[in-house]
Image (cartoon, rainbow, N blue to C red; front, side, top):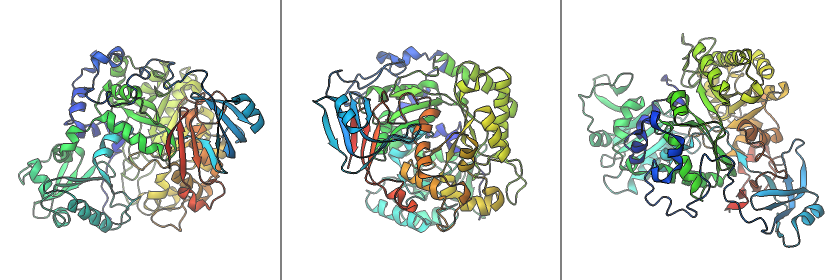
Length: 618
């Protein structure tokens, strides 16, 4: 199968180019980062996004002011009656993974946990009692690595057609047909996460296949890589792309053997010309899109998510303004922990006054994001040895010395570091940077370096991570969705077994989490738990990639609760059901520990509580 070489879209500085025609993003991008100050982001008279009806339509227009440390949003009166949950299995996910008979919450805090009689006494006679009726309660799930700011914009205007929904290209084409039938002539059909590298069928879609669906509707498909896209001839016509168009530097409008355009586009520089003619792209409000996405995620039991490329939407620190607006809306159902993105530049972030720990319990700046390499499935992850049947070892997004210099500079200013590393050579570079930080006198316990994806790990690297106090965050979908490709096309069987070694990390005492890397995969915590417990592959359900690396359900739950809270510097407030922590809870219909491991994803989320209030129920 033909493979295209591409980087990691979510970590690419160029991905933000596709949003340039969005009105709100255009206003953000027009601000000079050198003149941007934190107080501008706080001052409502200087709102960077036109407020229009956004705040007026919010349930509460003045919640916490983002970037004001210590403010707790949605707090209620001190003397409100407590709420007691009892009559079910309450898994606290504390240090001992204790089970409690009951818990009590008042306002947005947990005030009692443990024996039912004691909890009832602590709650008071006026407490409201909720009978769990034998159901399961856990702390709310946490996804420590997503891309919600730019991802929510894409999600709001593109239908998902990825592998979690359709297994074959023909199924995708049938879905496109159904979409066109439901739309008036001239209306766009735009979808995302199409991935012919794993969805069975042709390697690409061209005018031939897409024009057969419609020549009256512009049709556009974004590849899951974010590097490739496909469109029909009507979309090219609307975009004004003709046969004489020239390829931009580093990008390509693909042509056939006769030199004719095919509708396949490589690099966002090309497909942005089509996508920017899609009317919805110009009109979508990023703040509203983010709130709507997080409302959907609360149905999955998520109560905290992260943004690992803050600044990627507007290509400036002004993305913080979006966080401020959603934090003030009174509609935020999922907490946010954000990481300014390295490509914007340290000077720009410092000039804007953005600092680690800025924010409140609803939305906070947690750390700083650096990127060592690209994507293994895109053949840009940096490897010690060449890829299977290739001379290429991938790409270093940051030179090893630059990575060291910038990591030390950020760490000395108090920044926690999340560093993207997929290939084993990239992880070598990250660990060398960590050694350089320690040698420079930096307290590694305070920096809490985490390696994002941490895909290919050798034994000696795991040992070094333990020595340096470095943790890992694994994109578990790599095993499930791309495991067979890693074995057969990317690495070969021996090296593929080094993918996502969370059991080995656990045995070595290295902390770790699981994440979705949305939009790479969708953030379904129960499905992620199942993937980590079974290591079954999507392409070959009977094949388990390195089954010796499977972990227990309890450990997988920890990876999406207490461990994730620790990585996000939020263990003091979320991640477990303990007195004094925020009342972020999820109620399930079954205990994930007691169902067939292959059915964990089918466990239903019945209710989600965030900040002491019910934000979702079936």
